[in-house]
Image 1 (spheres, one colour):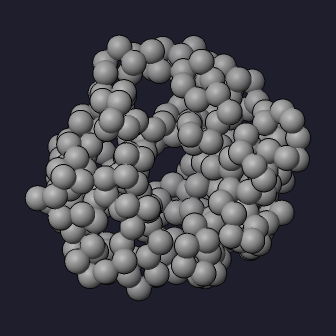
Image 2 (image 1 turned 90 degrees about the horizontal axis):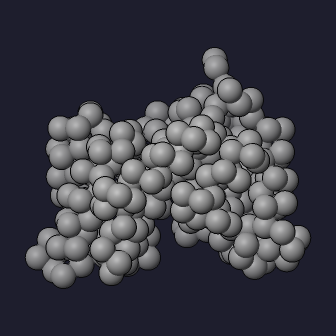
Length: 274
């Protein structure tokens, strides 16, 4: 089996935006998962000039864009009713975001279900699946994959895959969120849903703190998850999502790029990269 590729989330990188791609490349990263941007700011990546600038900088520094996250859905969730204000904003995000992903030739769109988009009831589950089906139909016209990042149990995940019932629907796995938000064993969830995974966020943390420790140094059993990832090789891209310039992780070193370099070295100790 060939090796993985290593990227980072734009919102976790100490210098987000096109200007940061040069440093990302210098550190040895191969890709960056972009953020479509906030509704309140007009979804910046829906602007063709901004898209072109990212693409030009990415090509110049040999940084790929394996996925794009619609993080605005954490504020205006897929779980909200279609006729609600949040539901209508979520639909606008899907329509504009998928068009932007197609224009930038980004193959995977990542739709988070956290915070104001969390799935905590049957109604919220059904509302989310309804919008995911719409997203899959629209993305399918452009040959794109739609992925859901969520905190569902393995059984609920299987049900979501069955309810959405689209060939281009996948799960975007995270190596801390299931423990952090639901108390689930990360390795257990990974082992049971790996066949649905399209990409992974790799991060760690401790004592209920998000992205708060270097890989393998928290309480999310990252080493066990890494072994499963190596065994089943569910996808090509592993995307770093530790917050190197946010406390408590930032307290380990005054330079967040130095912390990122350490995490890249740790990732290389767990995985083989192309």
